[in-house]
Amino acid sequence: MVSQPIKASPQSSNRAYSSSKKDSSIAQETFEYYSTSYFSFSCTKSQLFVGSWNIGGVSPPDNLNLDDFLDTKNSTADIYVIGFQEIVPLNPANILAPENSNLSKKWNSLIQTALNKRIVTEDRPQKVEIGETQRIYPLKKDSSDFKCVISKQMVGIFITVWARTELHGYISHPSVSCVGCGILGRLGNKGSVSIRFCLYETSFCFVCSHLASGGKEGDERYRNADAGHILSRTQFLTERHLPRKILDHDRVIWLGDLNYRISLPEDTTRSLVIKNEWSILLQNDQLKAELKKGRVFEGWHEKEITFAPTYKYDENSDNYYGSNQNIKAKKMRDPAWCDRIIWFGEGLKQINYDRFESKLSDHRPVRAIFVACIKVSRPSRETQSILLNGFPDSSI
Image (cartoon, rainbow, N blue to C red):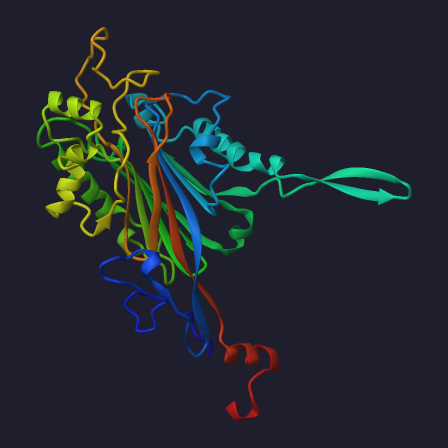
């Protein structure tokens, strides 16, 4: 009888890692080997880049350079997860046609160009002596250092995952689940696209969402409701040993335009923004307030915010919408940290959280770097011996 693979779980007595209750960061974790009769497990570390950008319905120019946004010169990430909101204008025609393959292909092409451009700069000339002459040949790396694992668009929401080529053989079970919110509840002008996959024996889930808008008092309840619908309605395909729900995965990251605002009078908010008083503003941030009250995202984490509010800017400008007296605002939109990246569970350590400066839309994108614990299994010594030598006579 062949034994089924054994999946490690946080509740198991043979844990892949132990964590301090006060600090679940990887820096505080002690990775251990543990074994069963058939397999031994260990943890290795992998770096993830996660970015979120509300494009505001702007089609990317053909020459858009994403090198700096993806930080390709400095990043050592193994996996890139990039989520977009409003990659198309949220009008009735686009809402009724949930996918625009040409536009999503264009974004993927721009990402591929940025991630693999550095391969050219890493070429090193090699001198080869042939008789009395020398010829110089470039040492070429694989031209596809990063390849797309999976991507999916639902109306304006688009998420795409890229991994180093050498990791693709260890990535399995990619799957997608879409949840529509907004107009008529399910059409998808708001909602989420979630992606699941496994890297070795660790399951990942990334949720890219666009929650309900609105700057009126009490509108945060609609955003809470959207988040609740996404958590309850997201279901992945049933596959052996794999979780179906978001929170059942080993590593969970949520990114997107969550649309939470600052609960202060407009004049007060704008005055504090001018003074860079982020700490006072964040004390009145709706997401942090709702988290503290336990009304949404219970148990989720967010690294400290040290950057300016990401919304809303005048077109092609560094000025917040409504701050220029010479431009009449159609609707008042106070500055806010609408664009966020949060995470759930153990085995993740966020080492960076910032925004990127681009005037492409009325939002500024946000980025995060995570270090993740990856569970890796290998046959136990007993199993390796059996595979090499067969069962001993005494076991027959």
